[in-house]
Amino acid sequence: MSEAPLLQADGIAKHYPVKKGLIIARQVGAVRAVDGVSFSLHRGETLALVGESGCGKSTTARLVMRLIEPSAGRVHFRGEDVTKVTGAKLRALRRRLQIVFQDPYASLNPRLSVADAIAEPMAVHNIGNAASRRARVEELLRLTGLRPFHANRYPHEFSGGQRQRIGIARALAVEPEVVVCDEPVSALDVSIQAQVVNLLRDLQQRLGLSYLFIAHDLAVVKHVADRVAVMYLGRIVEVAPKHALFSDPRHPYTRALLAAIPRPDPARRGGVRPLAGDLPSPLAIPPGCRFHTRCPHAQPVCREQDPPLREIAPGHTSACHFAEDLPRFDAEAGAGVPPIAARRLAAYAAARAARNAA
Image (cartoon, rainbow, N blue to C red; front, side, top):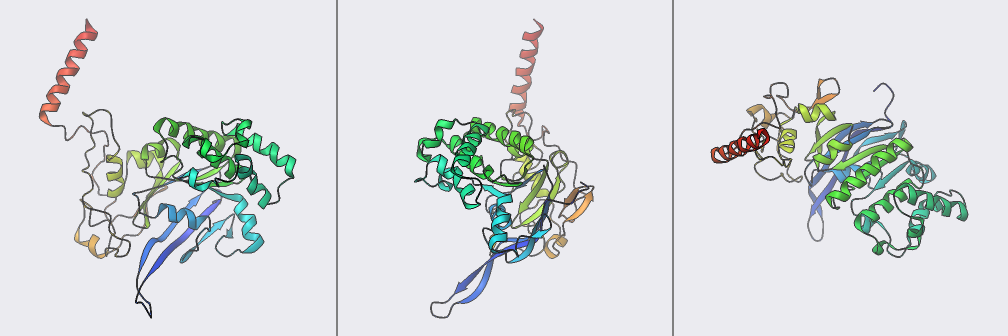
């Protein structure tokens, strides 16, 4: 994209000190939850940030929103350093940056009605008067698929999907430009997930929003994202346009995530084995490449040198020493089907073909 990014993160980090000692506590280490993350988000774009639980996705979202203070790095919105502004400037900036949390019930005040919860951000930012706020609440409820009479109800009276719609309406109340969606559908049923994702896409087109979409479900990401950033152990290891990442991933961790997507046809299995071992602790980051302890392609250099995030194709970056040398990836390969299962599948296919011919 030729225009300047709307949101830019440069080397942001969040380290939590670990101290030991009852009387005189001294720092003995640090949990590197986020450790040098950089990305850009353009106007009208959806950038998905994906990875295993514990890789630092939600911490990154809170750093971008300035809900927690970074240990290092900068976040720029429209060229202004979010990490430096304070007071009235920070409040004005937060009007343009809003967030939809993963658990809508935990993010809504149970003592506030829906009308009060949605109108509260407008009151904080001195937008309109009481009458105009009520009208805006009704407009937002309709916009998110709810009814005006829902305004007088309380959070416990709604389903999970309805509560998430209320959370989206509250985020839109102050007319933001960027909305951070922190796993907004992971706590919902599959059918409701589709409705909320379609709602988010529709709102993006109607209101010109930009999304930083945090998720671990790659099926959802494939439906909603324009670009995808893959995160592992506090760092981004691959960034690519959605179609390039799903068709030709250039990092072994990305390949393992794609191979783990469930498929309804047992005859079509990915050719990549599931990851072995657990995610290392952010308190003890492995030397060299962070993924080498679980990587099937690891070489001695991977244990010694930390690979930089480098461009291997236009718009496609990877933090792997052997990104260009990885074998062709085919997520729909039929490898790994047991012989008995293969014979049964072939017999079933032949019988179905015979029935169709008759």
